[in-house]
Length: 144
Image 1 (cartoon, rainbow, N blue to C red):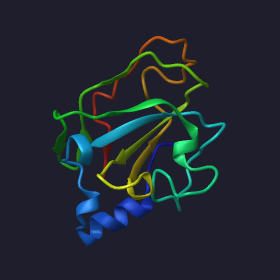
Image 2: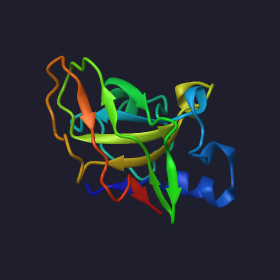
Image 3: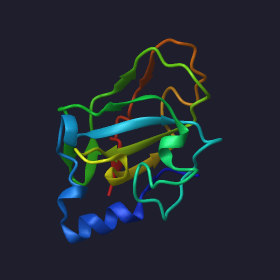
Image 4: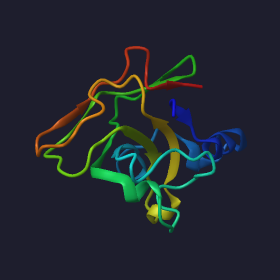
């Protein structure tokens, strides 16, 4: 599966909803999760991090999701941010990343933004208890 933007997030952008914003931090931040594609693969119909059923993003997450910090940029439709380091990662192999917007609500309200499984330095990787650093492309994380 090539990299993709979740259609349900695009719908939220078109409607101008607050849940589509990529400018939050902390509790309302933009996060990235390491994903084992044997458990979760991209589905255009997916909308939330945890939809409450089997095969959701949350089921395939390896390690702890990390926030794409305060250095996020938005230039000519391209979203970018600082590289991310996941610390002391153990678990299954990691072949993809999922970017999502966290909020103060339950995981069933955390909106999915992007699925990335190609052109990422550091993937695929098999965790060994060490750190995993994701280096975003020089051209940005994704472009609308």
